[in-house]
Image 1 (tube, helix red, strand yellow):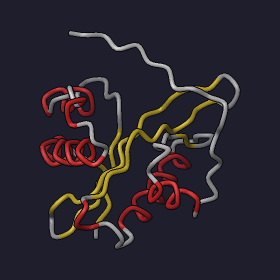
Image 2 (spheres, one colour):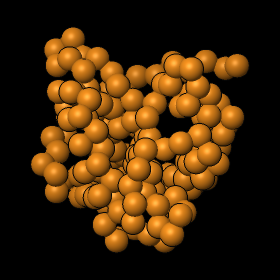
Image 3 (cartoon, one colour):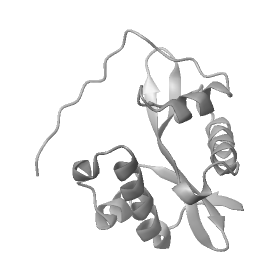
Length: 149
């Protein structure tokens, strides 16, 4: 396994992982992003996200997509949008290695911490995050405004 930063030619494989995650979360109809938009947003003039990939035999089998946010209380934070491991490769330590590489990225970019969300029904993910000493917040609600194109 190799972990490295994503590059523009990775986008088609990254988008396949996004679609696989949407199927797992029973929401494929919610994906409105496109590979073309991911290419612009991640590798254009002003990248909005970073991505680490895990490869086996030159095929991307997992990714960690993140961006930076700023907390008035905590300062610069790395926000982990998604960590995705292809179903056939789960349970082999890829997720752990990728998560640890993401933590290292947060340290290297001088973040004060890392944040992410996990669905309350996703017990495998919750148990995965517990092994890192994760603090789970209560009392906060996610809020969204969706804009149509």
